[in-house]
Amino acid sequence: GGAAEPPPRLVLDLERLAQVPSEKAGPLQRYAATIQSQRGDYNGKVLSIRQDDLRTLAVIYDQSPSILTEQLISWGVLNPDARRAVREDDS
Ligand code: C2E
Ligand code: C2E
Ligand code: C2E
Image (tube, protein in one colour):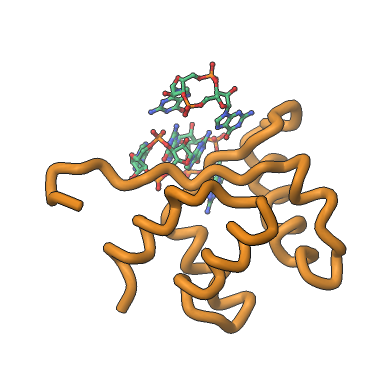
């Protein structure tokens, strides 16, 4: 993408996230619940998160941001447009 393009939004689907087995999704489920609690944002079906949060989650999952992004997209938990965020930002 061009430099003038805004970065993609990272949007978690909270209903799908609740359906992923917690052996896989536990850390992300706890992370999202913490953000909801800090914001007082409990009623949403989706949750917009920070670009930085994806990097933090990659550390938690011991994976590169791009591998984690593919995993979350394959679970149906993250919007596919989020790929652009790691492509522009990976190192
Ligand atoms: P904070 O980072 O000091 O942000 C204080 C307030 O600034 C937030 O209160 C929110 O009203 C606003 N704010 C900061 N960054 C953004 C942003 O990128 N977009 C929007 N729309 N508003 C922003 P809020 O929402 O009650 O959050 C309270 C605290 O909870 C935040 O303090 C932060 O420590 C934590 N938090 C909330 N959401 C997130 C998140 O998505 N990721 C992380 N890492 N922390 C979050
Ligand atoms: P959008 O970003 O495409 O979000 C569409 C709808 O998804 C939102 O409608 C809301 O129902 C839901 N949604 C997205 N992120 C969150 C989240 O973190 N928590 C919750 N509870 N719901 C979320 P809504 O609220 O009527 O907003 C319509 C549009 O207004 C948004 O479209 C966005 O373009 C703008 N908007 C709303 N809040 C913010 C904000 O904090 N910052 C910015 N820049 N735009 C916002
Ligand atoms: P958004 O509200 O449309 O914010 C878009 C970008 O503007 C943010 O990307 C961030 O780079 C910048 N920004 C907005 N408000 C602030 C602020 O108060 N302080 C700083 N330092 N930067 C700000 P980012 O961080 O990737 O966040 C993406 C989206 O995640 C935000 O879109 C918002 O929907 C949500 N979000 C992130 N942090 C918070 C938060 O603390 N509280 C709430 N309510 N929403 C947040």
